[in-house]
Amino acid sequence: MRIKPKKIMCTIDFSDFTNSILSYGKSLASEFGSTLYLCHIVSGALMVSSFGHSHIAYTDIKDDRIQHARDRLKKIAETSDIDCDIIVSYGHAADEIDQAARKNNVDMIIAATHGGSGVKRFLIGSVTDRLVKILSCPLLILHAQENHLISDVEENIKLKRILVGCDFSPDSELAFDYALSLAQEFQTQLYLAHVTLKKKNSLSSRLEEQLFSMVPEESRNWCTPVTILLEGQPYKKLIDYAVQKKVNMIVLGVHGHSLLEQFLVGSTTDRVISRASCPVLVVRTIT
Image (cartoon, rainbow, N blue to C red; front, side, top):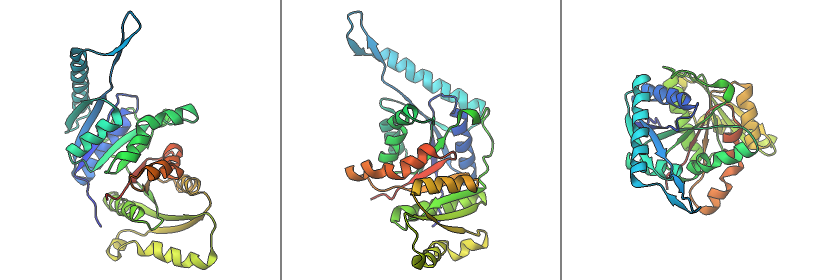
């Protein structure tokens, strides 16, 4: 199934990684002919009185901050020659992004983690990890590396190799549809990987055939898919294979919204997001 996102939202926090997000947003919007949104969420400002009591900032301060953010987004758009709509909201970042996406019928959101390990990896969960769990639309997460900053907004990000994790669930089938659509749009090499904890030789040929059959016949005119069976911890094997093949994007399906599923989602998806050096596109079926 060919998928073409009509509306793409870039989440902007005015960090050093803003241009990375804009580069992917601009490139994807150009390839798919999508409407591009720039979104910033102003967090609640906590003021402390002389008596030591905390209270929320006055309304006029809140309005000033919102207007300031709007002006900064407009300047970014003008400087980067980006035709876009501006969204500025106030509150908890992940929840407000989700609300803005639903209100505007956004088809894909782009965000960045700031990477690292230990405490850094734990802290990024406050926004990115929650977005993975609550968003209905796909989320493209850029794993921003401090030594790989994009100084300017690039006109065209080139995707040469895309890896999609396939476990034959409805979620991974949808992930494959997105991976195939991106591969067709960018004319890239497509890798389909299935990971098992222990390889069973009797099933290998059947699994490889099942992977290959996922690619529609008409798509093979322009795409020569590579199927691979990997053995071991799924997140580690997917990341290692991505590094080996110099993959430009990993696409994964993630399961639904129940409390148990939200808790368990970290087993593979969160680990790939936090450890992968390339962007990770996370998609889920809407139930």
